[in-house]
Amino acid sequence: MGVFRRWITSKKGKTPYWYIRYTVNKKQKWESIGKAGEVTKSVAQAQLAERKKQIRLGTYGIMTTVIPTFEEFSKTYLEYIEYVKKNRSLRSTILSVKNFSKTFKNIKLSEISTELIEQYKKNRLGQGLKPSSVNRELAVIKNLFNYAIKNNKLFSKNPISEAGLLEVNNVIERILTQEEEIRLLDTCDGYLKDIVLMALNTGMRQGEIFNLRWDWIDFKNEFISLPQTHTKSKKERKVPINQTVKNILMKRKLTSGGTEFVFMSPTGIGKNINTVKRSFKTACNKAGINNLRFHDLRHTCATRLVEYGIPLHTVAKLLGHSSIRTTERYSHPEDTLRDAVDILANNR
Image 1 (tube, rainbow, N blue to C red):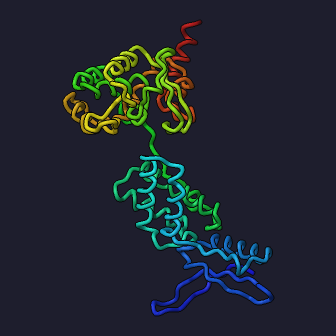
Image 2: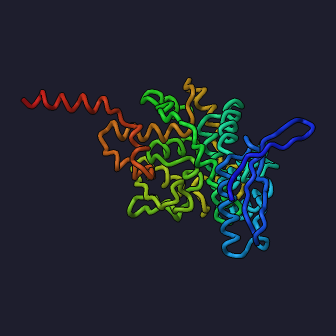
Image 3: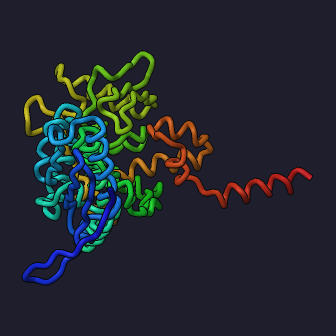
């Protein structure tokens, strides 16, 4: 038994292929695993290990697994994922699978190597995607491969795990100054102004604000309870209500007319707002503010809390960060170090 590279002659010349050799019922078997370069030696070794297992258990020839192509298995995966993902998250998953399938549609799962994944990364970056966007796609495909391994459709290591993700520069891109905030709020009106103020005063994500329901709000104890089904971390989070937020909610409650959502769409009956992209951009342009994303309002909230001396673990809990490392990017360690040595000098 073993793994061998054999050269196959065709009209195009000689091409190397990985083969595995094993013995069944005292008869020697040779099996092609795939073209060298498209399939790695480790894939062939994993397939040989599977054949040995089947021979030992007496299932060889009965339960021999046929490795599906990416397109074939992606259909199975998406059928499964519909049960665990909802709405926007599901659409994002489908899109990631569709993009990956453009390159790997007819390639067997076992033939998608780390080398091919590295080339895919370069191609997606060359198409103008940011590293974080490529990583989001790869995270979906990584889950797909894990599901294939779990269901005995792949017997090698996960190629996404082996290749790893791209490095992402997590430097905060944009923080509103106090003066810019005043200008921005002056150009906002109606529900947009309320939504912007909610983001600046709670640090809630855009989707969390859009999906905010009245039954999530406890006016008596002054907090918003975000259910795990509507948070990025999939964990329930409680967000305290300050006076600014309370005034907004009380005002909207008086005119809600018994609706389910706090921020109802002005164009659809019974539907909540699902985007402010156009109106937010218009407000920023009128205020003379460039390169500001709605998500930067959350960055602004977090940065100000840290600057006001709120402990990082408290800010992390408010924002729903699963790790305090994520929150640390809002702090400025060089300033902390300077304050530390100043304390030593001032107390002598």
